[in-house]
Image (cartoon, rainbow, N blue to C red):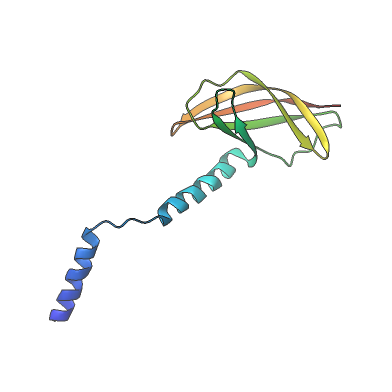
Length: 128
């Protein structure tokens, strides 16, 4: 009986003291990446604004062009800070060995956890 009481007390004392664990940080990062893909589409590229703010671009890269000269896109930019996104921006990408580019226009903005999520849409044209 004393051994059982001693074991219960040791377990109780151990639970009173917080323990640091880095596995939680890794799990949160992995879940965040999966959430990005589920909500925003596949990771496409990343870069920095003229002001030095990091951004990541997500979208559907499996869409094939409507014709050989143009196709519509929707791209989600996630900025690592709260910013006022520009209303239009030039965007280009390579698809099927051909470069496409054009102006995409801001259609929605959200602010979450200190980040800006801006969704742009527009038509990309073949660049010669």
